[in-house]
Length: 363
Image 1 (cartoon, rainbow, N blue to C red):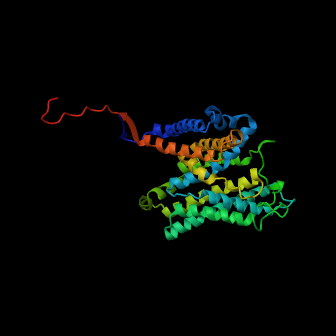
Image 2: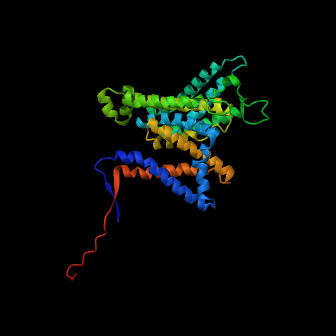
Image 3: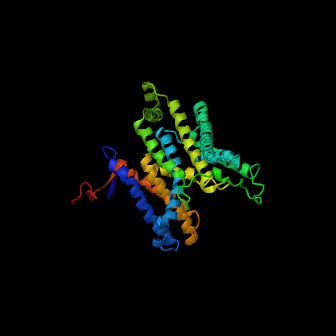
C-alpha cells in the first residue's frame, strides 16, 4: 500500500517539479472535463496550449494578458514573503485604473505623449492609497488584512460603478456606462504596429529583474522578509515588523495600481465597469505557482494568460461557458496545493503484512 513518509528535509527538486506536476494534472483533468462536456479533448486543449501561439498577433495578445498578471504577482510575492496576506489586489488594481483615468481625462489635444508618465504615477499612488487603508487598520487596530483587503475590493467596484454611471459617464456615449475615449496622447505606446502589446510588457519584464534584486540581493528586501516572518527575531536584530507591514502593502498596492493604469491607458483606452477582469485574484495563483520568485512569476503569468485566452477561444469556437477559464485556474491551484505535499513528504510502497494468527491457535 502507498504511504506518505516525512522527508528528513524539504526537497528542493520537488519544489521545482511541483508546478510542472500540477500543470500535468491540470492537463489530464482538463481532457477529462472536455470529454464529459462532449467535446474533443485534443481540440479543447489546443484552444489553451496551441492557438495562443499561432502567429504574431496571438503572441501579442498573450503578452497583453500577462502584463497585469506579472505586475500584480510581483507585488503579491513581496507581501507573502513578508507574511502579509494581501487578498485585495483586485481593488488596488481598480483604484489604479480610476486614478490613471482621472489624469487621462484631463488631457487636451495639445498634451504631450509624456502625459503617460503622470497617468502611470497616478495609478501607482491610487493603488498605494487603497493598500494603505489595509496597512493602517492592521497596524492601529490589528484588523485582519485578509478580510479588510478583500472587503475593499467590493468598495472599489462600487466606487467604479458610481463614477462610470454618474459624473464620469461620456455624455456622447449613448448612455453606456463608460468614460470618454482617451485621447491618443494618453495611450500607452505600442511596441509594434498593428499589435496591441505595449511598453507595459517591457516594464513588467524590467520589474522582474528589479524585484529579484530587491528580494535576494538588497538588504532592505531581507529586512522586510525577516520583519514579517519573525517579528521577535526582527526586533532583536533591529528590524521593524511595522515597516515590513507598510512596505509590503504599499509595494503590492503600487504594483497593482500600476497594472490598472496600464490597462485603462493601454488595451482598453477608457474606464468601464468591465475593467475589473479578475487579474488581482488570478495573480494570487500566479504568485504561488511561480514560487514567490520573480523569475517563476514571469513564466506563471504567461501560463495563466494562456488560460484567459484559451477560455475565450473555447467560448467562441467550442461553445463552452466563460467560466471554463476559472475552472482551469482552480484546477491548477488545487493540483499545485496537492503536489506541494511532495516537498515535505515522499510516497513509499509498503507491502501489506499478513494478519498474525490469534494467540493459542496454530498457524
